[in-house]
Image (cartoon, rainbow, N blue to C red; front, side, top):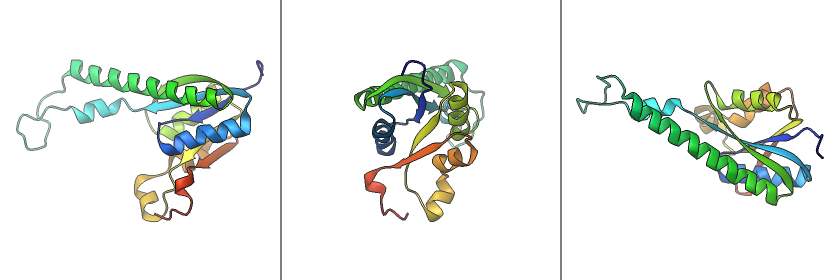
Amino acid sequence: MAGESPILIAYDGSPSARAAVGGAGALFAPGRAIVLTVWEPALAALTFSPDPTGMGGTMLPLDPSLAREVQDAGEERAWALARDGATLASAAGLDAQALAAEDLAHPADVIVASAAEHHARAIVIGSRGHRGLRSKLLGSTSSDVLRHSPLPVVVVRHPDDHGNRD
């Protein structure tokens, strides 16, 4: 087990991600796992832009110290989520390590790149079960990982998502 390549589990704390951790344990335990949470630092700038007019437009430059605080809080939250996922993975029989990574483009790209960087042998990801128009509007990280990963990808659906045709 010590020299074995890990699996990478994408984890965002959602019920689907929790199901993916359980599925990873069922398929890959005992073994090594990296539990990855992707976080988006750009949200700090979008969320806390000042609006002196009250009309919804940004008229002044963003307060850099406030943006940094929000970004730091987002990163801390990502690490907490990754640790939560690693705890679940350990309970599922995996030797798990938490990892948080900054999303500079698209979460699927970060997941695939992190798997390559850590020499993962497979990626495990949850699926929200969106279909049709909802899938087109919201996108699908699991579908994007499937399309772009050179590694095997296991998509685990949450039990409540079976039969969901949204």
